[in-house]
Amino acid sequence: MDEALTLAREAGDAGEVPVGAVVLDASGAIVGRGRNRREVDRDPSAHAEVVAIREAATASGTWRLDGCTLVVTLEPCLMCAGAILQARVPRVVLGAWDERAGATGSQWDVLRDARGSAPVEVIAGVRAPECAQVLRDFFEPRRGPA
Image: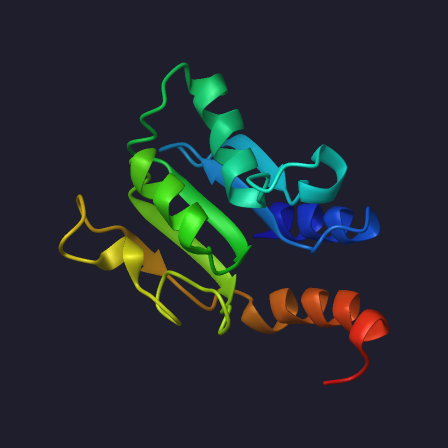
C-alpha cells in the first residue's frame, strides 16, 4: 500500500483524482504501477487500476494475471471491477471505500458476484484512514470542507 499511496499523491500533485494502484505477482514483486491519468492522457479509461493492470500484463507477457494481487487506495469502480475480472486478478486489496461509485462492496459487489467468473477475494480497509485523507486533502480546497 505504501507504493499505491505514493502513486496516489503523485496523481493529486498532477491535478488528477489521487488514486494509486500496484499489481503484485505471486512472489509479492510489483509488476504494474498505475495512478489516475484521465486528465493528462485525455482518456476516460485511464484509472489507476487499469493503468496498473496494463503495465502488469505487459511485464508478465500475458493478459491473464492469475496469482496476482491488485492493491489500490480507493475501491474500484464498475469499469475497473470489469477490468479486474477480465484480467483474472484473484485478489484485490483496497484502502478507502467509495460510497458513491464503488463496485467491490459499497454500491455494488461485482467482484464477488456468484453470477460472474470466479469470485475475487477482496481485502478492504487496509490503511483506510490514510487513503481517505489523501482524497480529502485533494478535494477540500476544490469543494470546501465536508
